[in-house]
Length: 426
Image 1 (cartoon, rainbow, N blue to C red):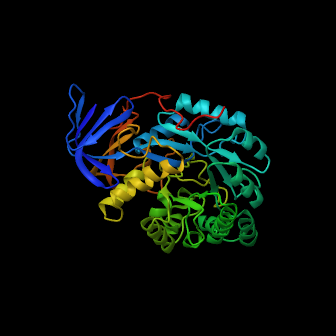
Image 2: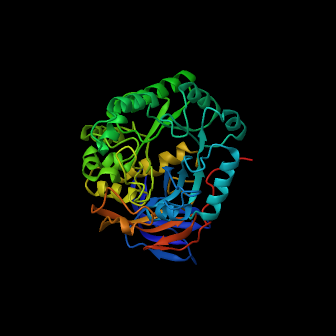
Image 3: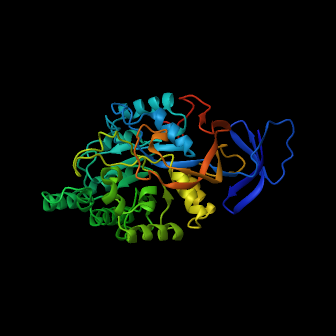
């Protein structure tokens, strides 16, 4: 297929030209390509981005299919221009054993429309199994999500695995805050005070120090505060989420549990620090942390309501809106959402529009405006703190490995089209 009359987003800038797709790969990129007898698609000046790689999503499924499953979640990904996602291990049952890990990979192979990877969850008890399995991506929760984990476990895991992502909120600090604040005003700001900026800063500082001592890289998930940013070093990479970039603690006060997430939404000064870190290169990539729940899960008290924001299909429109407002360049966007996450995960075949790469392409209309409505999202989660936001920039077509998989709200492939993006363990 020859994509004609396109605006092509390259690291060096945007060029007007053509993209030739041969099978699953990009065969050529240029201003005018000599290709005969090919199927031609006139994009009429629309912008073409590389397929986005989201290294932090929660697809639920298993016993939590009422919240999301790998089919609905991957539809949301594709509709949002995410052609490859990496799923976190805090499923039910959790992905902390070789048997559950293999079950999850098999399930994703049957149900996902997008390409995928699966994180293996690190606990204090499963390090021998982790060493034997050697999964390409691992996740460790310092807040106790998968059970109590101490910093020596983090150090040992760093020595064993090739890529370790860390949820950096210090469990001891959280417990001290909880004991001190329990019985106070029960609103969603209580959750933010329990999971304080100090809880994140302490965990990031300790993880960064351990990584520097053992000379192994550690990846910090969903960094949210200026204090935590100051502890990053040459042995850390990190990600920021759309909700921490576009929302402040004001949304938590106004919308309650719909805006509740871990780590919590922060102050306007913290948000400003994140944007500055994006510009300077201190933040490595952007990831959605798509975390869907049912409306019933979001009820209850501040501490009981589920934490998580679903935003897989809103991430790119939010960032395109920032582009339209002059807050972000297209080159920075494709670096943060395509090139950098591909490099982190070792996906040599993805992340750029270049000959030899997978033909993962997203055609966007930078001028198209739309109003966010949770009811219209492809995710099963029918709530969003971005409800009613007017965004400018929309996904119109998506190609995955050369196949047109999405066009104007229609999904053109069936569940099971997605493949594992990295080699599977034996």
